[in-house]
Image 1 (cartoon, rainbow, N blue to C red):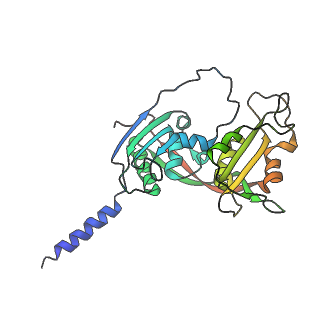
Image 2 (image 1 turned 90 degrees about the horizontal axis):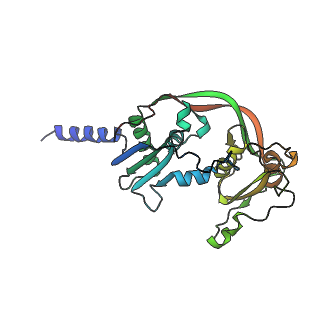
Image 3 (image 1 turned 135 degrees about the horizontal axis):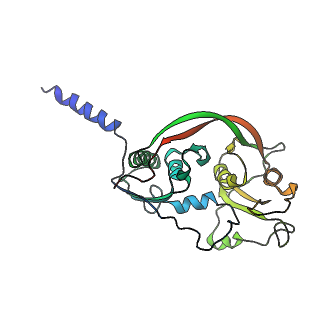
Length: 275
């Protein structure tokens, strides 16, 4: 009887378990700066993170093209995708938030989303020769909590395509019309608290963390005064996001200081290694 064979099989299985998942084929390249073809002095609205994510990260598990991904975004957003950590908690050289890259890769059959994240971690470490560490830092944040009096959130509802015409309705009286202050609308008919936080994060001055204890999908709809770049006028205090979130949604953005884990990039090559 050959006793060496079972031991060899065990060692092979152990080695396979320790081998991180990897894309079958992957291309990583830097993209040219598209510039500003219209010469606009500023973007009149902050970027919508949900829309940016849908444009930047295409394909993979749970999509119509599960066997292939195409990512087109900055290294910071690629790290956000790989490590599932908020972008504002990633620290590194300024260019990780400026230079855009395109990743096209074949995903092994049967891979799930956590496996694709680990594949992306390995790919970024290899192609950018990346070195990083995690550290905890006490910093100002907003804790999103349920306000006194309770949540006013309504359950989310699926919206059929013909109902999406409401994307740009007539503004409520006194909210952002001609001659008034600039405003922004959030319309998320069937989304999570995390989706809502991602959407309003560009409008506040510190990271937001969910401390509501609420789970499931909800309908978020609100208008609030928005401080646009170049705006010289006064914004009405009663229409600021902090007031409107509490008044209309029954939630509150509480300023706090918390110990938050950050991802710190110690070294990364701006030009990715060859494919």
